[in-house]
Amino acid sequence: EVQLMESGGGLVQPGGSLRLSCAASGFIVSDSTMHWVRQAPGKGLEWVSAVNSGNGDTYYRDSVMGRFTASRSDAKNALYLQLDNLEPEDTAMYYCAKDISCSDGYCFKSTGNWGQGTQVTVSS
View (cartoon, rainbow, N blue to C red):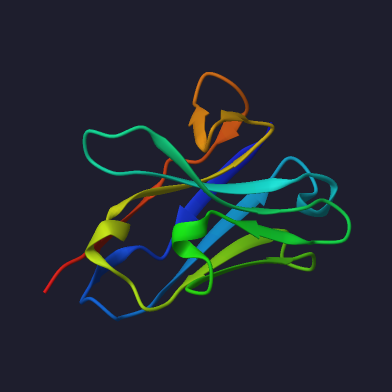
């Protein structure tokens, strides 16, 4: 059974940092393209980043480019998202996911495998 479990969220001041983790079981992370997706209150599921299967190439939405860094540990079968220089607009529930469908930067929770999410709140 595929399971994804996020951790590492919390309350941080603007300009601060957090490191999110996603522990995976039931499959090999390096065999799948893995995604980070976030949902702010009252908004849709916004695609944030992806780590390609195999070579581990990373991709980001424009608004987080240069501030967020996605990575993968094959040894730990886990996915990570380093969040730096956080802004209030980054406040959201963050999910890791695989085999998802997205269009125009927004994703659909009806497909793929999703974790339960971890809350990131950026506020002074």
